[in-house]
Image 1 (cartoon, rainbow, N blue to C red):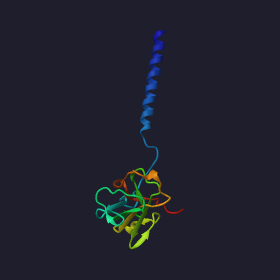
Image 2 (cartoon, one colour):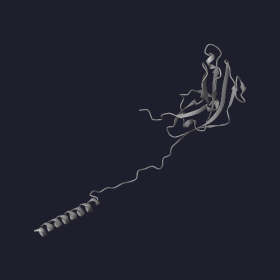
Image 3 (cartoon, rainbow, N blue to C red):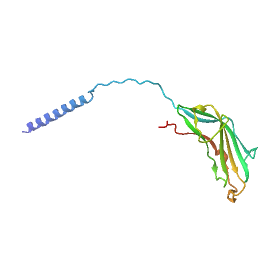
Image 4 (cartoon, rainbow, N blue to C red):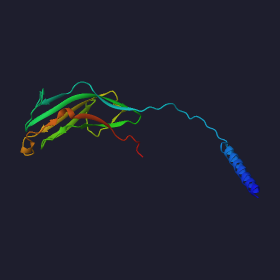
Length: 179
């Protein structure tokens, strides 16, 4: 009786193994037709957005070029002047000019006013820079006005701002076409 049971077990194992082999063999075959073709076009490349200084800019305190570290008092105006070459490539590139940085405690009542001139036209920080301005020069002027009067109080004494941290920036804005 034992032999009969073994033979049935052996036969079942062989049948299961054969079924597995048949199933695995069928898994690698392709049961449908397909085709592919190329699409027209070549490579694409990404654009650029750069701002390169043309020369070292200058700081002037009340119209006199600053050498060393200026110490300002209420009534003074400190002005930076420099020029930069715009790099703007890409079908839909768009950016705006801004002033960033500056470390330290700002003076009470002081104002910072950037002015940008492009093609003899003063532009605002919302005027878009596009590929049409690629290779053009933009003049930047940053006025730090420390007014004399009621806007300034004693809390503005002995404060320091690191001017070397101030930057003229060209920042990309959304170039998505309008919906």
